[in-house]
Length: 55
Image (cartoon, rainbow, N blue to C red; front, side, top):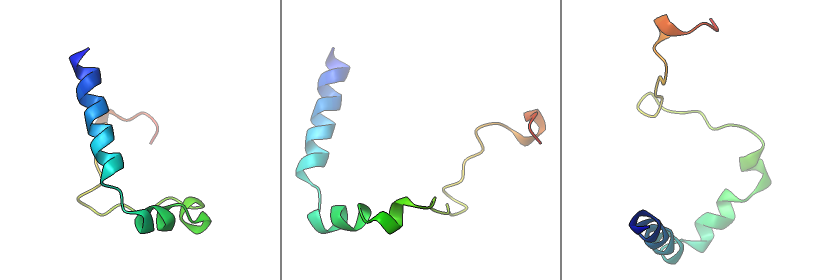
């Protein structure tokens, strides 16, 4: 249960620290039509390439 309380606290902090102008930009339809490209630092291989069976 303590994990739930910690999670609720994190969610509450995030909600209290939101920037309304940033929310408005994020909700524009042009931002939701396509996936964002990730930088090299953001891309994470969850499965090693030599273990993949879909390639």
